[in-house]
Image 1: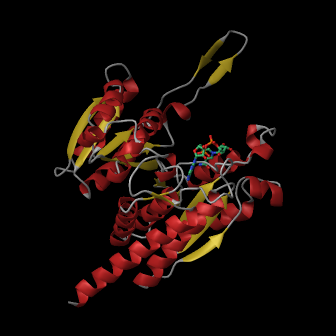
Image 2: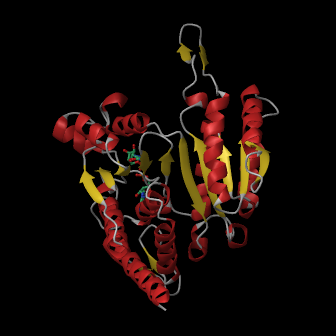
Image 3: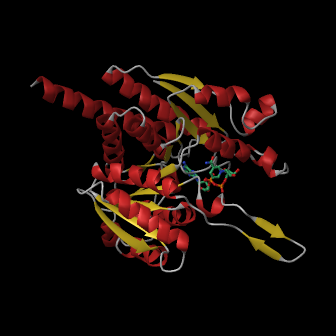
Length: 367
Ligand code: NAD
């Protein structure tokens, strides 16, 4: 498997290095052939080539089997116009790869329950996978304009049936492998676009008799996610609603450094932790590598189709957290048995836990 690695800026290279380490470990243990190609994006790419997304990076990404991205953003470019800043490279690569389904898990880790502003009994057991439509809706619909003369501005929320059907299939396929429930979020009591959305999703749902489909209005969904997050498995939403709800649901996990994401369905799938380049902690060893490591697990699941290895990484992360190890962002005062570790140490702990779990499963096979 050819994996293009776009480490980027700030903590991007630090956490990506650890994610690659875990992927190499999986490859060694499982006998897989993963080839990594390091490419420039963001501020570092501007410094070295003048462009936030050099042609060579784009071409190599399009020829790879998956793209693993760190983060982009560097304060020294803040004075540039938006189209020249490091973040422009990110938007360009997302667009060029053309993924239409953005997957964002929101998981409550038992040992991190104190990190969430929600009470532990509310979050316990929550494991939501957001499937957000990424190429349509209000963010892309035409016409759009701010007419400064008339003092009027407008955007267009627009979807075609086919755009809804393709992302709905992603959600149902994923739900079929999970707890077999899709919650589709819309605003069908007010918006025609949502009525089309609901009809198309219902149509796709009929192809999956083993998966339960429920519809929720976005306003009440915002409340249900906070009140009863356990009730949800796969949450399917359009672009704007998904943007808002997936950020809201991130409080279930409790730290930005823990959140992975994947964007699938396009020419090449793109995997990136949710966090940014965190210039405030870059180079200090304080970056939490778990978001990037869990992103690597998503790459194994969705591109390499190595479900067992993906699950083994996720289980190893839980094991290390349960043992009390915390990067600085996760550490909370007065917690017994807690030990603060660096980026490197956290990754090594996950690596060790992974080795142990794979050793154990291999010896079980031998028996
Ligand atoms: P950020 O995500 O970089 O940081 C927000 C806060 O969370 C900071 O205090 C940071 O230290 C902390 N944090 C983030 N990731 C962490 C991790 N893995 N471990 C520990 N702590 C972590 O967001 P920001 O500060 O708003 O933006 C910084 C730069 O990153 C900006 O240039 C922004 O444009 C860019 N950005 C990039 C992406 C991306 O590449 N996908 C996403 C968001 C922001």
